[in-house]
Length: 118
Image (cartoon, rainbow, N blue to C red; front, top):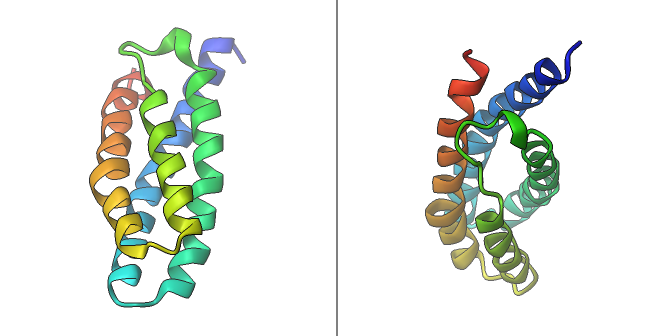
């Protein structure tokens, strides 16, 4: 398999995962709003873990990106999320997910889609 094809496969996997991640984040936000912090926290651990894999994958595909997929923006927010998580500030966590992380995920999907559709 060619290197370019491999990178497209990585981005396809990331794209599909981002769709699932968006739904998971919506579920987490709802659980925080409903007071089900225990389940939301378990789900948050998975989200934080998966972001590392996603960022690594995006960074490894830079040469086929038409428009640079910036991962630096999310790193700042991930630090805030971890701090809010440690402080048990579930309102802030929900807000960060909804207003900071979701728009970034949406932006990444918009930039990945044309690459995987080629």
